[in-house]
Image (cartoon, rainbow, N blue to C red; front, side, top):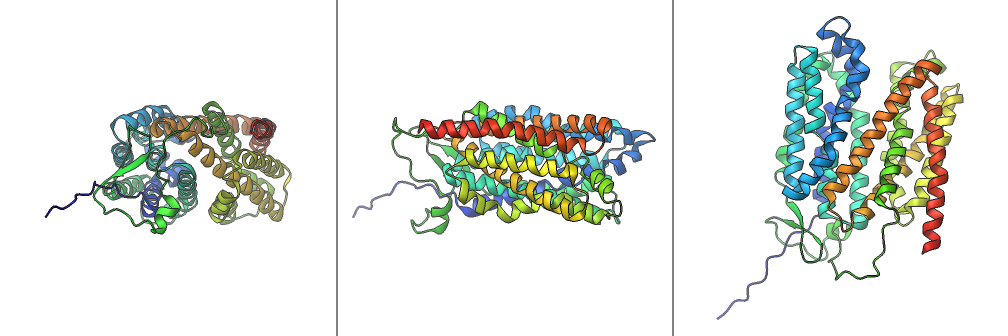
Length: 421
């Protein structure tokens, strides 16, 4: 009797895999996001006058992370996205250990440089997901990744502050190094996504049994079986150059308000407590966590119109910061900014997923990270220069103007895309 041997089927890349990647990014980013606000407490340990370098050292990981992201992305496409994702997590572990045990300003600065060069977990995670998913599945996964980043941005400074009573923020670098190490161990169990040579479909290697066609995870996250490419396939709504420009403009217009927001709140509400200032800082990020998935459903087929509206709300929200003079007004404008931020982040995820179709995901998301970091650095420089000359309200006016300029260009692009169809 003969037995037919079925060809080996590759396992589905399901919801649990996406959640694992997002969860690992969340825990690994705690030190990277939670400790920089405490640089003014850390640096005096290295000698008198060291605190004056806080502003420069704040952006050192960002600068070197942006410079290294395109290279790491191309290497991921060549040698494997999982390998490079593990490299990023282990690189963070090494950098945090060095920072936590640094006994001089030079060594601590070198650790921050290594954090930028060896890190890049966000771009590496997106490249990994981009190799396994496409279309709406990928854009939902990227939206979840942004949610993971927002959650870490809200929670990490609170946790670090709470631990400061027992261990200094400086030594917490070494303590929190266990988080990216743990993330690396967890990610090691995930499959390696790969693209077949024949049709460009994304598949995943591994040993799990094939999924059932009725598996809800498969219907929500697994891309459809790739069909033979046709000449009538829809083109992405934007070019890569436009995507990178929108990413830069979005990061610049939103991040520019971050460094001096607390000073602005104290200027407008002198009696505000540190807790209240922190809650106002976190409010736009909480908006994203509350509404991102609903916004994704609403804009996944019209991302250009959504991002134009997002930039408009960002412009209005930042302008409102410039005139808000009470707690109620500040809450209102922070909510408007949060709505714009949510629309912008979700629509950028949709546009990035569209542009990733048929392209090497590591290189694309590495380049996208470069422009994101460039926008953050430019925002930090503009905020410092404007605040020094015109006061703490200057950054929000500058960011609002940048967002307003982008509204017109994005709206015209949306109309032109609609007419061409």
